Image 1 (cartoon, rainbow, N blue to C red):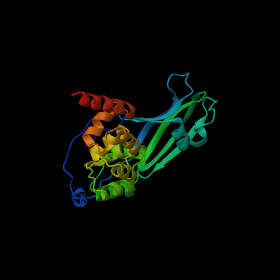
Image 2 (spheres, helix red, strand yellow; image 1 turned 180 degrees about the horizontal axis):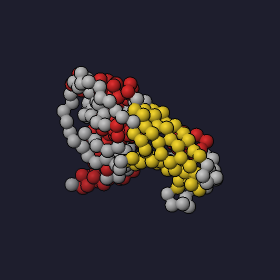
Image 3 (cartoon, rainbow, N blue to C red; image 1 turned 120 degrees about the horizontal axis):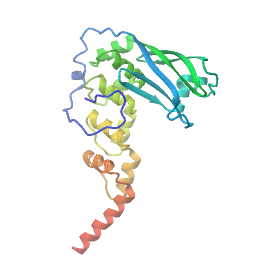
Image 4 (cartoon, helix red, strand yellow; image 1 turned 90 degrees about the vertical axis):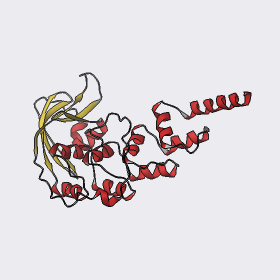
Length: 258
């Protein structure tokens, strides 16, 4: 299980046996839970130090904080994120709608290009019922909020289930959505020859930026057909294809000397 709303980093891995998809759905007969609205959720839109031109949109609630870059903020706040927001006291409103639910936010401009306020989150029952049907009922409304902030989607669950990956609980979906661990990404690794059987391992590979391009370059550097553990260790240590190529030459030279 991966337990964190938003992942800044991932460390390695709890191995678990692969179960058939039917086992993942074993909790589907559980009665749907009711998830209450959350209010208030604090939000801010400002730079970090009052001088930087890089402003972020942040949501915080109950010890959880999620930040969005300026580009992401513009997608959420629309014109508000690109306007000067130069009138202190001016009212600000925006809405973030996701499959997991909707945040209705309001607040006021604090100073030039900075604003703050609160939001109300309404979980979407269709989404939570769909997760429950798949054996992944969120633990509480805070989990549903986290799923909304990382833009988790039912299609993502189904796509990974179809490829044989097992979710332990809704927290795994939070991690998967936060890092954009998609069925396409799983297929990319498989096509590059890297066998990744477990969801935790797939998340770890994504967190370390292992992709088909890196695997291909490592193969050209003399390390084809890397096993998962080898790829993880090399990537975690910052091994680049160029470094791997030079080390391969050294090892070959030493072999010739012997």
